[in-house]
Length: 149
Image (cartoon, rainbow, N blue to C red; front, side, top):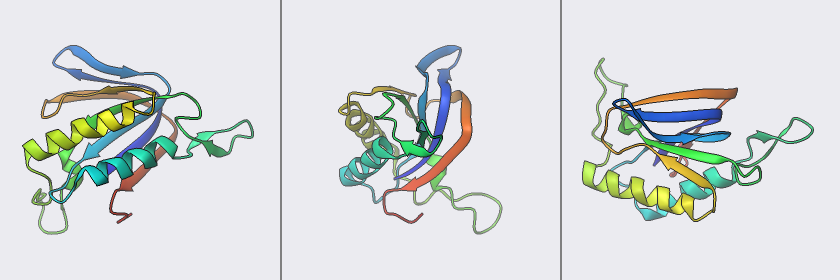
């Protein structure tokens, strides 16, 4: 699994003209699922995100997690995180999971996050979505459950 994690002061996701997920201070997580991912990857990445120390403490040092600040998380599926652009000009998505597997792991990832007692909102798997956010800092992290980066 891959994630782009952005520290936000607010974020929302819309499908058509309806807001289907919205958070205040917390993390926006764009999540991609690969062919080789399993629930183990979902657990590993969720745990990393919940405890990632990227929020400022009273000394303005990145020392607090979303859990420490009782922040919120918005998760949006994004298969394009597995787009391979190394050859040619059109990305290959051969490493992305098939929709059924990806959808199941996306939903499982959200369930795991919710077990942390944080407020978790989400987009709609396979929908065309519009994501609005205010990136705070800006702070953006790239995470991979297999620790490729």
